[in-house]
Image (tube, rainbow, N blue to C red; front, side):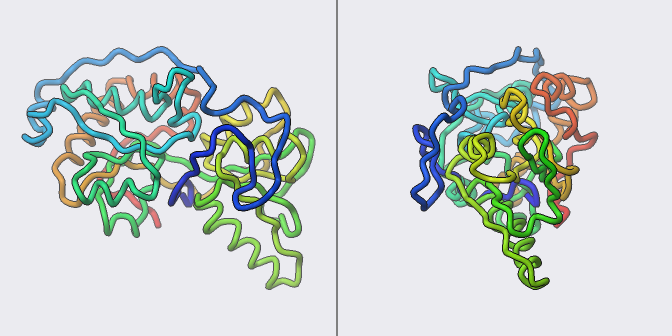
Length: 301
């Protein structure tokens, strides 16, 4: 992203570790893959007029094959039974039902999702992917949510995301926070003769949140729905630091020029207009990121 422009996510699920480092955190909070949190499914119905417009190949298959990377709560992760759940899942399931389709979720390394879409292995990429102009050169996006970057701090502390020189800041490895946001802020610190930001990159977002809760870092930077969920799960140990910034759209990725983008957009707009989209976002506590209009290729940067 500026928001979630993740290039890849780690698959370590048993230890909370600093990526590429030796720090192992004890007393970790509940692991992302062990969280059984689920919300009630919102009932939706097939819309024949929209289903008729689905590309023939997908219509004949009766399903869409979706590449997804987990864990990334509350958007997509596995429950203890190994089922992929989350806000993204419930929303795309609703869109698929509207189109008369089922969804086959296939777990993938994040960096392999877009190449697999280009190769035709997946019909859709769904993994909190920020619709960016750079990515639009490779695939098309149907926008479905607006996320920003939100910092967190230990409760009662006072951290300014715009004045973090010399602080330890946790991020998930290969997110935009890791590749773009923190490096740029750190470089500005150095240019002004101040200490660089000591960025700590973790393989999993849960480990970044644990590091903050345990006082191993001063702050955490992540996508707004992710930070909101971490705060909710922290039992009051952490809170938001500063306002949300750099909002950008999440999008479902499809092959360049694929008419599937239009089908997804029309189905989602139908759910926005009839209120079902609002029910789904509210159920997951991410209603602040609701959009009013879904578009194809809505990158802002």
